Image 1 (cartoon, rainbow, N blue to C red):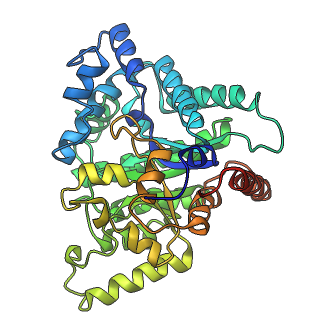
Image 2 (cartoon, rainbow, N blue to C red):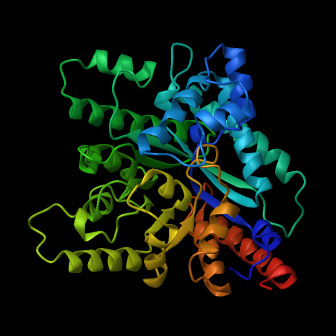
Length: 402
């Protein structure tokens, strides 16, 4: 059992750098919006939905992903997107999160009424409203609430994913599947830079999400090269269902600044290439490279336990080895609703199962702020991080380990 009080963990300033908008709705809001929009749900009570869809445990990744069909269905207008973003920011702040990076695929919400720009503006508007409300009550030297938006390209899609993808597939019917995926990724990259540069939307990063197996990262080299050239920060879902080679691709082919999950970083059994003779050495060198470059891994303990059958116990999670090898890691929720978690919950889960002392915890928390894709200039980010550290140390003196 850890020696940190629940009050201390709740109060310290935290980040959530890997949280999906469509996986983090308020359950009651989902029900209300479904009724308003006449979207059919398997139940219209929180208890019913938690029993049928948003379970404490899932049998597989496929079962875990079923909930997104319902959340995406009600996020098809600007008002719902704005409301959901606002509520996510408010809920995160109530958990002590001071810096939030919300990610989602705007392509899943585009329709005849709303373009990619409209969708991004709606989400940004909700986050801005929350930020204004929160910061109106904060007095110096307490750190303010800040946020950024990350857009997700998809490793795989088909015409059933959304109206946008249906149009895209029909417009490119003479292209093969991988070419369509590559083209859609590049189109999103161009849209992201255009929106960032021509509006006040706080768009800070580009991501790649979806099934890794059979849909390699290097199919997105062109889109990542485009955002890289235009100085947009980059993260990649990698090593979540595939092995170390997927993480290597994300770093070398896509210029990843951070890695989402990185779950199978150390798994030599998931190395497929015959060219890699000494698999243990390959993993060691890859981990060391990540450590040297301070490429931060966005760790999502609860969702990994729910979606990866190979992990029988939290003790089997590679986070313990990540700590031992001094990798830069940060605690993330992934999906607050679908995983029934918070950043405080993720931290407590780690504290109760891994060896984390006072200095280690502080470093883990500060990594999140230092490796964030902060939307303002670097010198302002440094000032913000300094304020966060000072506030953390103030709480540490008042309510530190018992």
